[in-house]
Image (cartoon, chains in turn blue, cyan):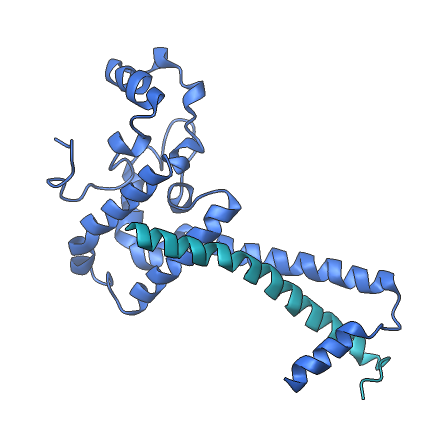
Length: 191
Length: 45
């Protein structure tokens, strides 16, 4: 309490330093804080960080078009699993604190444990993407710019009807595009 | 994710934002005050 009082007194007592100096210190300090905060947050968006717990599924993307393709554009874990806009990203990061707890108690620290839990993890992620209308897919794949003449007949029939009407969202059909599928017996509409 | 879990995480997530911003402000203020105090230009007692 005494420390707080001293802190407040220092805050409320004018310094002899020029106002410009104080403002500059605040400005530079703010830049440093924000830079450090965002750098730290971006460090948790790297593939190396994700591999810390999810190594088996991070490897799987190497066999898919989201890793290697004719145009050389690739997606990393956070492109599809972390919202891009700041507020939703913070909510997701806070939620991920629970996943850190599971990391420390070793919920998926062996291949066997991971395989056993894979279906549960996949279902949660599909539901999350369904709830946000596959926002992470749409960051790159924008419906308004889809050229149906370049798509196959089955894709056109689905995109022009269910997707266009909003009855379905990307992840309803595009499951397992970057990872192997878990046991799909309980997934509705999946053959 | 259940609705309850969804609501809890969103409350915690949105609550974290002002905590981050105000925490950063407080930390920067403390550092700046510390630096300014080096010159001992205030009489606190």
